[in-house]
Length: 251
Image 1 (tube, rainbow, N blue to C red):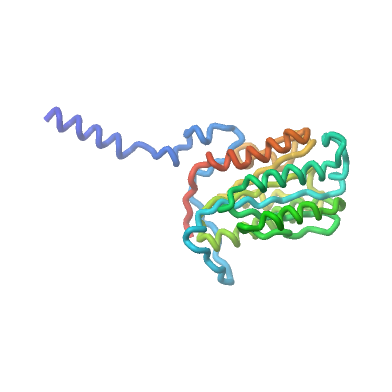
Image 2: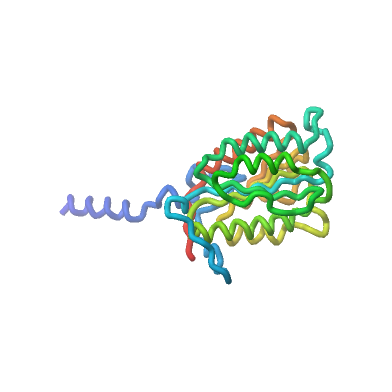
């Protein structure tokens, strides 16, 4: 009887123990700047049009969608070792893109003197096109962060439909300033952090940590004050991607 009681106690412990992947106290979530991904999302939402579903071996791919600030202030040389900030950022993003595994998707959205538009759709085998578009950035214009993040949200949702909701989704904003007063990002970010598994990561270049997109426990924010720190911050995006907990999806 005593042995049976011990056995039942052990079974009870094993049935109630939380999985390390869903425990909010897991070490992978210990950073105060790390959003909580241990929840279930009804995402992506249904669409009016059908999207071609990717082959099974590509549905678990990670997605890195870059929003690059090419506004007029990126032509300044402050914090850029005598170079224009845009030049330093382009070099750092090229190194980042080179380190993204070939099996994972990379995309680029830019706002600059040519306007706001997606320059490189999320995909594999597009690194050379990504490099070409980076070097084609024409510095100028304002900082429409709200519209940029909203468009990034749409593109990631479309990709999620192609992957049937599987995989990982990162929206990475590289900026050197606050949003235009008539184009604030609050609404788009509120949706992303509350209704989707998309990880919003921002690198503030030479602007410190006091920024609209710095929302502890909801977004990841890194401050970079020189070219070395900018490159290091981008490298950490890939490193942290490896430690995020698995997210569950409901369609």
